[in-house]
Length: 250
Image (cartoon, rainbow, N blue to C red; front, side):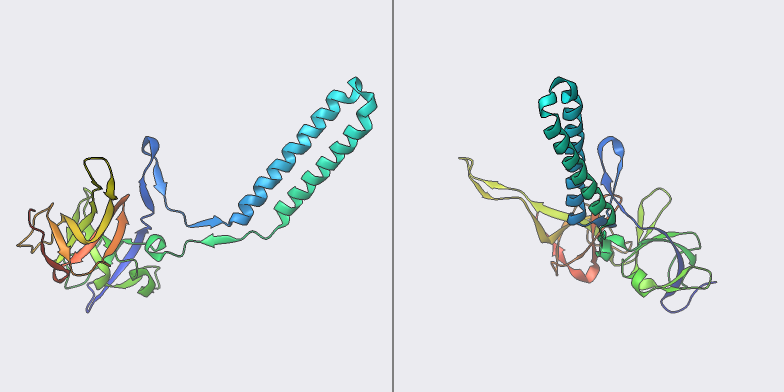
């Protein structure tokens, strides 16, 4: 079945939650939720109280036979430290734990999906994987069989079997341009490296492209371009009409 209008039915596959590769090739996964700083501090104080109690017990045991004169004081200190540790554990275990959710939907909404029922106007077949704008999840309608009806305007590109991208007409992908530090001959830093929000270095070209090559730096009409993460790399999406032109020298 092929859908009419701007509709397609997909099955979400992945949240695209791998930020980058860390040490030894391990995946760095974005945080979905975390404990509040209050909980972290409470756990730390509890660990300190337990350590103090253990130290007080060792002091009492070591001095029990060697220093009977101060035995009573050491015993009192030990019981005080144990009570404080017990109170800290009670506070830790019975306090209300506040969990903060990551509310950045660009990071948390699913963005990779498999085509179930394609659209008549797009070159996809069932089983193709596509990368979607994060708002596709917000506007999708869940079907009776657990799939999602989406607006095809939210499709950014197809992910091919070899991991490469197949873009739609008039759509380009690129990466941010970082300006280098400006340093005088005497070593004085006049400006630090920073992102140029109007310049984009093209990494993927539209199939109907006639003007640009991979590696060209182009000037965008808007500094608030749509940026997204895929497999640890940030990309910037540009439509043909959002490109003012190619920067001289590229």
